[in-house]
Length: 485
Image 1 (cartoon, rainbow, N blue to C red):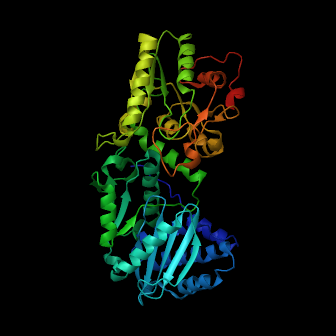
Image 2: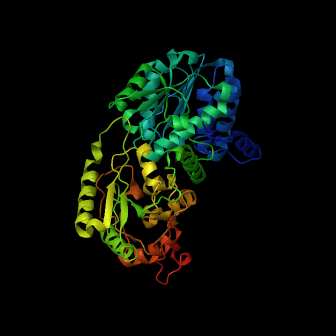
Image 3: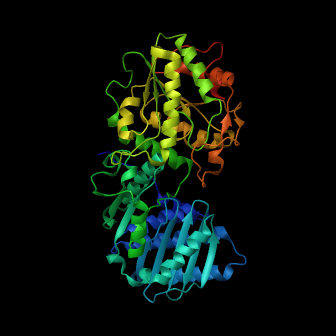
């Protein structure tokens, strides 16, 4: 079993804070992870770290109309020592929401609720009563309702922390988000070492994209069926401690790249033995952009790319990556429309190119099944994001592209990990009026469709085939350096 690095360097953060740079909300959340999972015996140490982080965060907020409420929370934190803590409990609503309740033995309480864009504090001197609020984030109303429901129910105040069931819940249907949750959770557990209290790992069956022991080790997983949301609600109703969100102190592009690199290392045993340069015909892996957003000219561009490859090769193989499925539950569910559209496109390609191109469709396969197949590919062409990370996990070079608004995010967060050439950055246009097949309310800029003219795509993509495992010189006068976009 590989040793995973600790992604949250709390000591470095504390050194920066003591030098006068206030804590960020993700650093408060990272300290909350450690406090929530710590044993009662080790709690004084982890409580002192969490308190230091949160008090420092107040300096980042500054003074103003909320000064009275800030003083309320500062007084609560300063006066509370670890032996006076009655309950420490987590009540995360989803993967991006971290909510930590701390109840004192006199039943006064605070709740610290963090999302990626802010921090909310609520507190009171008795159960069910809110005496102070401070801060905000983009989903503040849902968090306020959840916190108030918890404190009014009596469940938060009624239990002793040592007896509170501790559940780490994994139920995200986005492949990379779930994998990164595994890595972050294990990083926190590793950081605690002997200070880790017993936990139960609950995994949604529809999200078993690969054997979790490859990342999490030999811990026992409890698999939850198609009613994962009901399971989460049942845990809340029982008063259990529910951890689903694992922010790292340095959360951002560096953490995303680190998680991708760790995941690639953990999954490397799945690669085919001859993956460095598999014998036989040239193998190209591609992804079709259909789910959240669409590359408007993608079918015409792929037709043109295939024609150009056939001018150099007598035949080759195309693997269409497709949506990733679960090992434990063979059901494409809401992605059926994407499967059907991809199948139609592939059939049209078969009709057009005949036996000169062999097609393979990996839709619905788990990552466990995809990695061995994709690792034998020579090159990939895919949208930036999950579609380009998956072949990169298999060790395949390639190119990626995206909507202009996402260019900087993908180039900074993912390109350094994938090693893929980001192409057409200067020539991609907005086409947000075209919608993907599935509407995600949370997607925002992430759902914008885009246009890349076929000629622009070929001009920047073709020279990159010189980087393939089986290199093909197709520059046509354009150097690889010029094609970076």
